Length: 216
Image (cartoon, rainbow, N blue to C red; front, side, top):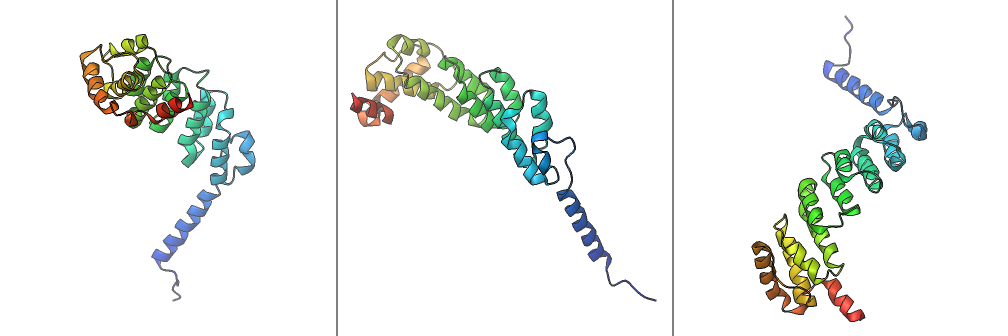
């Protein structure tokens, strides 16, 4: 009796390989019209969708097409969210970001609240693993707007999140610029006074501060 030269193991491997090839050439159902020509090449199609993410008109389109972007899905949603910071509320955009903390950070940085205390609260609420980075960016922006003494006093009154970050830049304003004083909430006052010791050496003042002084 004639016996097959293919063992069951070899045959199963052949079938698996064929299945893999079929997956690679699978046609996308209901593709993004602008990427239609790539619908039979999943990798090229997914990248095309990501590249056009900012052109999507609404959240429904984001959910529909970014889900087709495979490995580019998070980047697709992030690109769209960041492009809409001027027209859609931040909490809604954070929801689009999902579990992508990098997306949340970029959204928060792109459209920061004009009150640093409120921005720090947003960082704590939505920043995820990048919340400290968000807080650092917020307090840096505040400092380099060169706040007056009344603003320094205002932000020092409240014990909010990231007191260490805020206290550092309050102390920089006081110690490096001679504007305002360490006061307000006890915790912030202690942080400010401790950092004044560091800023007693003006070489420790923020780099941009030193450059600004040189240009005057």
